[in-house]
Amino acid sequence: MNGITLHQHDLPAGLDLGPVVAIDTETMGLDPRRDRLCLVQLSSGDGTAHLVQIIPPALGGRGADCPNLKALLTNPNVTKLFHFARFDIAAIENGLGVVTAPVICTKIASKLVRTYTDRHGLKDLCRDLAGVEISKQQQTSDWGALNLTAEQLTYAASDVLHLHKIWERLRALLERENRLAIAQAAYDFLPTRAKLDLLGYEEPDLFAH
Image 1 (tube, helix red, strand yellow):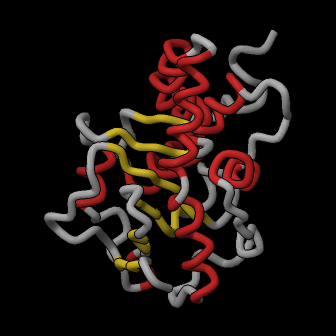
Image 2: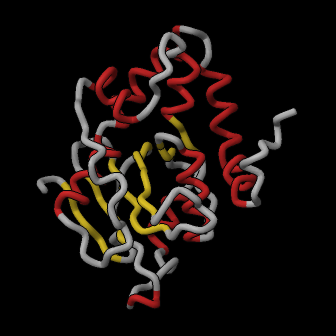
């Protein structure tokens, strides 16, 4: 578990992860309105990952009392880099009560410029753009457990360790195809899109006929 640090309840004070921080979340399921936020993973792109375990008061934790993490998530001078930001922003808002911004989403970027494929999952982007094979074996494990396994921590870290390299490649493609501005507009809308999901407007989509 080299390069992985697990924190319970909050990030340590004074930790500087730079101007662009890769972030992912693990929850109890895929409904951000219902399923508890369990873990927030962060990386500055230097090959190390910080994992914050969110433990509810009922299990002896502090729940949403994580001021250092929330300060980073809402810092206007720190860009938060996600893959499928729509879900993570909703999960964070529901779990911690804060709106994450500003953000970048590699899934949106991939869909805008990699129109030659329908494979836009993180596993696909890691392979195609970073030359790394990651395992999704722990994706459906119990993230609400108090004691996370070494395999869970390694899996969780892998979701953020390669995002900076992937974004570097995608940003170059967005610039080449003259789609960087439309990508940015989509990123700016993501906190609102996540809020609509939390209000129940996921299906039917508000923008559908």
